[in-house]
Length: 364
View 1 (tube, rainbow, N blue to C red):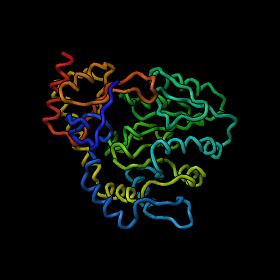
View 2: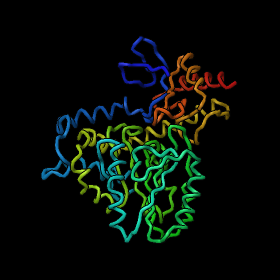
View 3: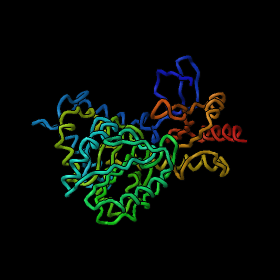
View 4: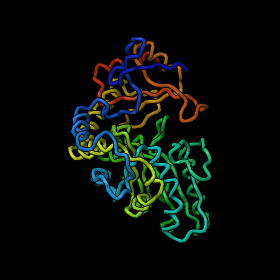
């Protein structure tokens, strides 16, 4: 698999170090925040007050209030009780996995804990007894419900899944969990990294797809460094869960993200900048779908900006026609490479016209 290098942040265009230029249809900067002028302005202003980084524990006797201010604003956006910001999405997930058994034990009497890992679940949610599953998500979910319903009542069940499939895009039907008895001790852990900012009303994720009973014991984690453009991660859910994580030594001992980015996140949320960028993105996605004349030979889901194929030759065809997508093994080096095309709010109609033309040539 060939690799390419660049010295400049890609936007609509990527220029490689050998001087070649391509239309850039890859990465996870779905809302174009890498080039957003408001974000840059907020960072510049915030750096004057907060400096370049914060070299302290969040649990120090002196605390920088911008973190908690940003967390409150993020919780409002997510329509969640509480949220916690950490250094990155991977650590958001691993912090939760370090503490989930303590959280479960505090919530009720539990004799044993069973983990249920969904196919393709991100390594951020790999924890105790991790067992990789390569089946279909719906088959796994149906079998998981059967296992839970047949288990002893004093068994706590921890279900770990992505919100949407990645790198191969798939939508997941969380209603399959509705047949779990209400009294079951079930915890749902969901990685929203590829749905936050895109999926749900206003981009607040998949919470609206989860049964209200189960939602009370659902904990979400996400990278903020994809659609939202903030190099940090977040955990959100019930106030009790988030407060438990705040007291964790794994949280206290970890460095926080740069405070200027926490300020930028707060301001972008307050000004509804993400909602505006999402509306632009949805227009671009629907325009591309229309240009494909309803023929989509990709793995994708409605109103989602990523289009995938297991045909590695598609990547070379795009590249030969001046378009760079991505095609590499993920998350493990032995995984089958996926050709992945990502549309962002930065793309212009002529970019999408060209992408549709080249894709239709390939699939003709």
